[in-house]
Amino acid sequence: MNSDKRALDTAGTETATGTDTSTDTDTSTDTATHSDPADSGCVDAPVADAGPDQTVTRGAVVELEGAGLSGCGPYPFYWTLQAVPSGSSTQLQDVHAANPMFTAYNIGRYVISLSVSDGTQWSAPDTVTVTATD
Image (cartoon, rainbow, N blue to C red; front, side, top):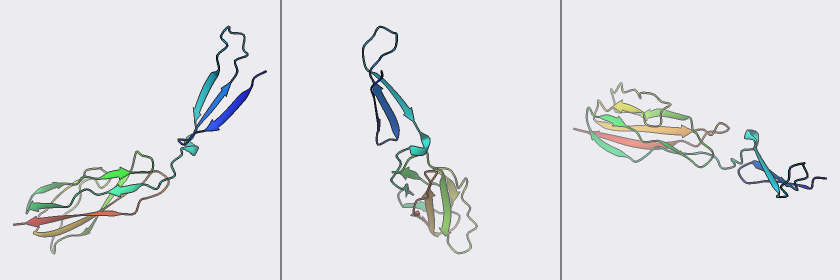
């Protein structure tokens, strides 16, 4: 007969232990684990970090420094230009990258937001301001 105990740890991994009654000669307790992706233990919502504000000179290529925190990664990223200086036609390169780039063609403030997802929910947006000077 096999005595069996099961427990679910905080990471969503089921662990079972039981007394070995098979025909092998060891008498130690056997342990088996199984991870269930549907029960990943991810209870914290993801948090976006758009990185530090920056000051650059006009015409500089700016690399943003995004990160996803909390929740469970890997994180899909989504960057959006919220505000640009008047007359600017700046576009972000690869809005789904952790570190997208853009060129600060005009003097003024560029406000960019980042949201990240853990596959279940999206974070609240976090913003970064890049100020281009002459």
